[in-house]
Length: 374
Image 1 (cartoon, rainbow, N blue to C red):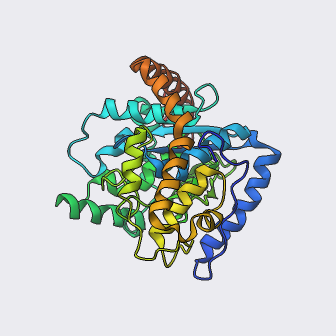
Image 2 (cartoon, rainbow, N blue to C red; image 1 turned 135 degrees about the vertical axis):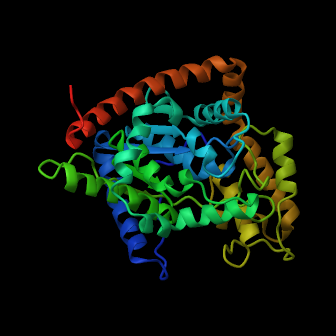
């Protein structure tokens, strides 16, 4: 299927016997939420976004971008934060941040995000959002932050890669994310199951704020998780596709870059191609990518290649990627040809919308806290 035409409703992933009760509950609730979105999309506001640490890649497209475009087209209000403040959570040098933000926004637009229907803004341009972090921090304990699995994992990764301790910004990341979601009263957040603890932190902040400061009339919604069914996309080294690992295929890449990426992709020693995600993850990854863009299933694609081997598989996948990404890349080139002006306009409009919402929210929060003196 083309990246510009995501499916009408993604399937809910199958239940795993080893999943936790919280994941099982989120999975069951997601099915109901999809039905509610189909009936009344206007009652949902989605907040999601990305850290601008590099141009977006194929993993972002399959993992998040296609789903955001699907929700936008369904009539859900989508709010996208380009989280520039979060770039400095685990690094001393943010690099060419304006240039990277520009590339991310171009990727959004090329993938189908419509700035007339969705809001795209940057953290640093919305002061009222960031000011919410202060009262929100009073609602969580140090122990709760220390237990957050993503904070622990990212802190360990930062120490391993850079030999530095955890910054205060990284430590409070779940609360900053709560401010991102709650400033606009977001009530739906697309997440993978590994991100559920982060969303639970946001729900905790909302619930405690309401209990402490707005008991008679709860002010913040407790956002729900829309559990995504997107596959984990592997890079050409067999590890999860990541900008920092240098194993990714960027959306802005050329056809030749795409062919080189697939050519270097790991497979295995078995000649006959089969779709076995657990036993043959690298082969399964190529089949998944090829099937996504060819409009078929990984199993059928494996049958098509069969005994022709990895060489034929890579040829088929390259052709599917090149053709499937052609419309997106053409749109991206057209947008980039207009220079920085198109991105500046998108961010100016999005930042203005976000500021208007954040200012109202902060004014309400100050009134509920009793910190309005004029």
